[in-house]
Amino acid sequence: MGLLDRLTSLFSSKPSGDADDAIHLYVECDRCHSKVHVRLDKRHDISQAEGGGYFVRKEIMDSKCFRLMSTEITLDARYRVESQEIQGGRFLSKEEFDARNVASPENSRKNP
Image (cartoon, rainbow, N blue to C red; front, top):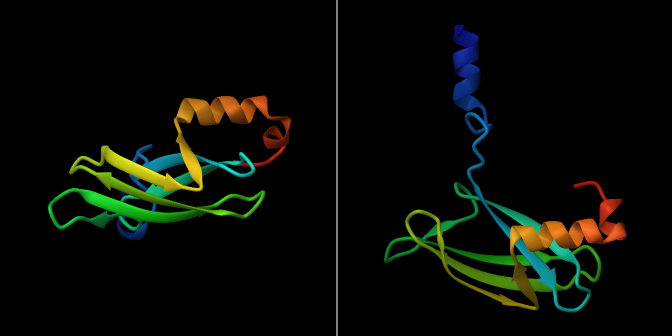
């Protein structure tokens, strides 16, 4: 690796390897039932809690009825979800999100 490659790797925003340094949320709007995938970057979107662990407050808007869904999530020191609350929607598992998007012809036409 040359000097230029080393400098580029120091200032690159790409994570090393295939690692995704993020937490993924999947939600569904109560009103229009639109599904939304949200990627939370651990370095920028998540705050450290006073008593240890982490927390997130996130406003999520779908692309169909544009209604805000308010979320509050607490995480332990290893970024595992301890509690999560949402107003205006509901949380989905990745499997539910994927299954619902495959089943919906409207969503299959959209680019990710």
